Image 1: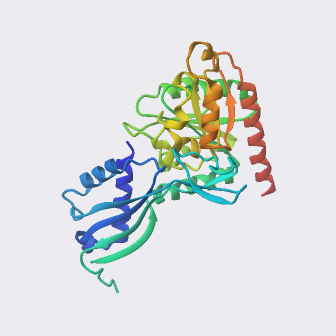
Image 2: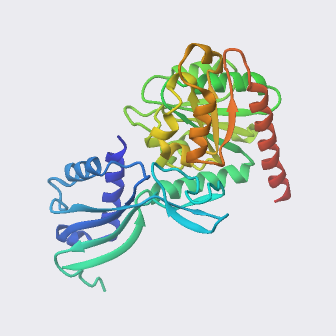
Image 3: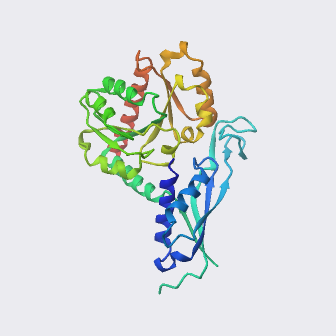
Length: 120
Length: 224
């Protein structure tokens, strides 16, 4: 259950990226979470809601796009999604593979209900 | 509605501190392993047998992570090696800043090999880089041979798999060859050792490999 500490890290990113007076305008935090990132999205959303409750960010929620797990095989030079996190090439059974997606844990963008004020 | 595009890794702060730890390890010529597993697979027993074998050959130190108690640090301290216990008070994994703090209490000048024993948990510790060179995942024969399939995240991130409790194979239903082939489906580049901390089977091979890794680090250090 490390989703609470991940939610805490998301809050820190919001606090660093959005000017204080704009925090109340944050509506949606758009995220990419890989299928093999080891994160339970429902728990992450629950933890985030619990942390922002009663704060200027209380109107904010997470919007999570799941990213499929894919590997690239250097033997046959193909990129393929695989089931269950298998890293064997499904075409040639090659073992010289690398993971190209599915491990992401990223904040991509933040939707605010008002334009961000110019700080100059 | 306006959109602020930021593209930030959620755990960037942890990763920054992990990078600082990694720099410190490189500067000191330390080889660092992050040992992970489910609870009860034998991480501490593995460290005890490893320390007993390498004592006098490689100066080493240990950081222990547990949810409660310093029982593991007490076990390791019996071998007269520097050890620091981190008690997470409920936290299910170690984070890079906890390691950074713990390093301050260790005599790093005289150490070449550092073991970090993570909290027993096959899920959460996989997300947190501590600055280590490699993750070593321990899976014991009593846990069943399907663990790599059920917890692929940890096996993706690990470089070494230790199959522990080989002496119990006659008494359990799981098969180490199947455990190994399942792990290699998830991560074909895993280096695998089959070990018993009770009979010491496999311990010499594991320790010889460790000595080799430490010598590579020294070589790099001298070259720099």
